[in-house]
Image (cartoon, rainbow, N blue to C red):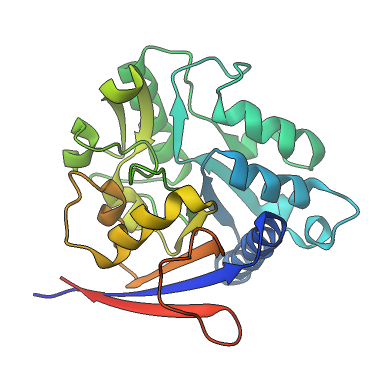
Length: 265
């Protein structure tokens, strides 16, 4: 049975506009979730591009902070480095400094991955955290309202790196992934969990992503080499928020900066 995917991509002229669009998207999707289900459960990624959006969400002089339903928000992480939470490479530390220290979220609303623990222990503990906070039973998977992803210039997303074991993990919610090319371990949500979310979007900026983004979206299916191709949401819709440099090799957008691709497999 074939599965169709509708990919909508929005192109902004530069990094500042990209951050503004991302902040707006976070607010809109969180608001929709709270209006429909009473709570917004969002999983975020690290990196400089989301950092700029988080800083806008935290800024009292910007419109998005007052519109975010902070009281009804639970924040999770897509992946994490195997480092303590105060380490310079920690995704949690970046988020804390850019966002968490400045907004009214209670500790109980913040669900971090414990990168300081032994990787398999940390993965198991985060899976338990998901099962408890989502009140899952049996083989149920959590359904996040929104998952925000980035993409590396090697085609990886989350901490699903090319030719690593996590690409083949389908039974767990969270896994510890050995990444030889980085000489380290990473913690990551598995791709079936990501695809189960109500909404999934990529936030991508920079000319160094243009060629691999085109290959991920329009090239042959080869997720072993391009793990971002594993992201095929069950909803049938995938959203990308891009800057002009990252989108340079994609088909032209319409007058409102929006493009659409259709895929089937």
